[in-house]
Image (tube, rainbow, N blue to C red; front, side, top):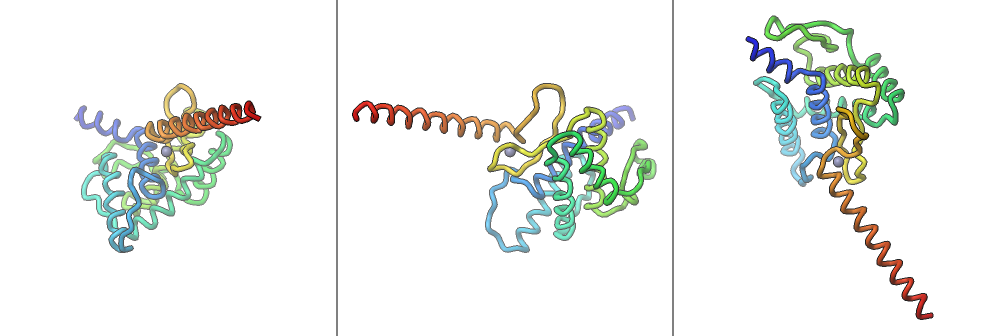
Length: 213
Ligand SMILES: [Zn+2]
């Protein structure tokens, strides 16, 4: 039982919920790691439902995880609403964005133990069998709200790489994070280095050019 509880609290910690929020937003409306592939619309929609279900399983959602293409469409609407919190410039703007969502999109705070199968914990959805998009939006609002409260700073941000549309969660102490992943940070560092190299080359060419005139 202790092991079960430990496992539960690891999977359901506020931070774990926030990471799941970011992963779902990125799967639904970000760049993710997937290369966009031209496919028939129906096939693409089914593929997306599989990809989103995979993210849910990765973050401990118990089976069966079954999503219809309609669920994914509605979850994408929720993801776009949540992006406003990540786009906020500072903690005040992030709080304002969350307050809008809490006023317009979530129910009152309630406690549930899912019929005794989990420790009591807070929910903002209308009931335990709420649709996926309602569960996604409300559980994300709850996790982001607690993170903002706890750290007094925006709970996340948008990746600074212009080629990337992913969001990330700010967690832990240290300098403010700017990129969603190490991959984006490395790519941008290499690009900046190349731009610097080109600028130096151009400068030395024009210097030698002016020397000849
Ligand atoms: Zn990125």
